[in-house]
Amino acid sequence: MSQTGQPGPTPIGGQPGPGQAIWQPVPGYPTGQPMHGRPPTGQPVGAATGRQPPEQLNVGPAGPGPVGGAPLTSNGPQPTEPFGRHTLGRQLVIRVTALVAVAALLITTATALATRQLLMSQLDRQLDAVTARVRDPNAWPIGGPDTGLLRPGQPIGTLAVLYSTDGTPVAGGMLTELGASGQRGRAAVTELPDPAVDQLGGVPTDGTKSSIALRGLGHYRVVGYQVVLATGTDFGTLVVGVPLHEVEQTMLQLLGLAALLSLLVIAGTIFASRSVVVRTLRPLNRVAATAQQVSQLKLDRGEVALAVRVPPADANPASEVGRVGQAINHMLNNVEEALAARQASETKVRQFVADASHELRNPLAAIRGYAELTRRDREQLPTEAAYAMSRVESEAERMSHLVEDMLLLARLDAGPDLDLQPSDLSEIVINAVSDARAAGPDHAWQLSLPQHPVIAYGDPHRLQQVMVNLLANARTHTPPGTQVHTQVSVNGTDAVVTVTDNGPGIPPEVSNRVFERFARGDASRMRTPDSRAGGSTGLGLAIVAAVVAAHHGSVAVSSQPGRTQFIVRLPLARVMQAPQAGVGPDLRPRP
Image (cartoon, rainbow, N blue to C red; front, side, top):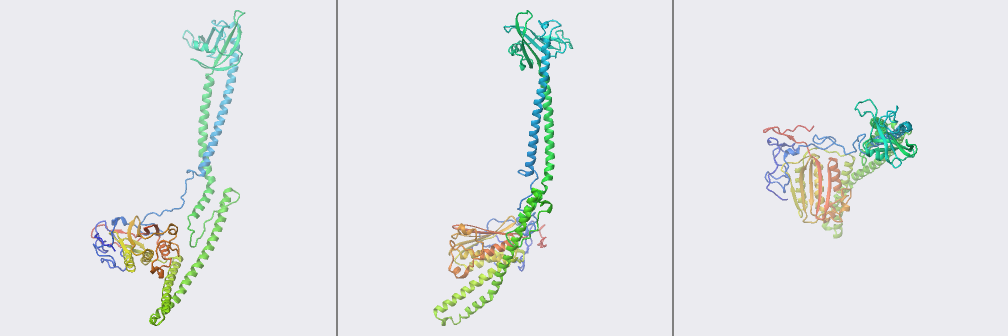
């Protein structure tokens, strides 16, 4: 085991400095004295790496409650917002709102088109009346007070242009409210801009009404007719128009009002649909909550009580949600019956294994005793008989180990009876590595420890067995000369122990089941003659996994040719802090 010159851990029972961690001592260990198996101060075993300051280790034991005062979080599905992303409530609200918006758009469009059609019909009738007054033969040429544009009933903005046969404007004008004298309140006829006159010259003369945008005047509704000029012999073209300004203003006001009302209806639909959807989906949410609660139950082993059911009000087959709730209740009943049958079968098998293991202990002890009794006269036996008796003794010993391991696993399955207490994991690892070095002197053993003791919350005897099994696994399944490195460290709220060797490794098809019972990796990891003689039962790593799980920890393995590493994580014990220098250890009980 490698030695380094790093300073050793502070002995328990001394006076700590300010902010220094105070560890609860291991029961039976004399305060202030070096631990058994731990090198004296200044001579720690192994190359210690990653020194952890004491204040970083202020955590508590794992268990049903919070670890180190930290809140306990669940890994199960968390409740979702009623209108969160991808939720049914949100989809329903969006779709209902979209339908209302489309309906409002269609109604607004239809109303606008109908209103425009009605207004245009009224405007066309007004244009017919204006044209009838303007087409009076006595109205031309324009210029007197009795002209057609100045007759009563003509709307402001009415225009009329008379073209000769060759298309030359003869007369024309537009009725305005402001006369040439600059006085308001009197109607007068003003001249039209030349661009507008030129545009009106292209209006059809078949009496068809059309809309046109006149430059400088805006939109107009116009109609053209052939008329007889004042000479009585020549024909000309008369174009009459009325402005579309009032129609456009009315349509703009109507569209603005419709848009405002549509927005109000859509906003009201959103709030109303949210309320309706929330009330409607409450039964479905209760069914989903029941399903989530069941999904968080541990159903893989042990006795499981499925007392959760969908309420009868939500399991009424008259509704779709009720049929879902009824189906979930039927499924839970079937699952509960299946789990009960499985538990009964497992209990019988477990009891059989425990009873068989217990009953086999005495016969095996007797066989070993008789085999050992023959050692005194074994020189007098024939060579073959002596060899057979040695093999009987060896296999009986191996069978005894197997029976003990099976009995231990049966007890752990039935419910671990652990003596949980703050345990010095560093001392446990030191003792286990020392024993492993004595049992396997042909291996190179290395140990790395932090400066301060790592106090885990667990059963020291069971944790000792975990380390013994891990080191025995590395010793019996690797060839002589293999380096086995054991390291103790702290990671957050966990004490971490790693056992790494540079042996041949574990094949991938075996590494995922190494913690199963009677699992073996002999295909790649060598078995020494000692292991073939009875050093391995195939239950060592299964016991490691069961004990670590009983401590609310975890164990994992990663392997490749030339490097195999087992990682054990255990909950740390709570560390009390000294408030000031000169204050002794605070050994208050853990809350």
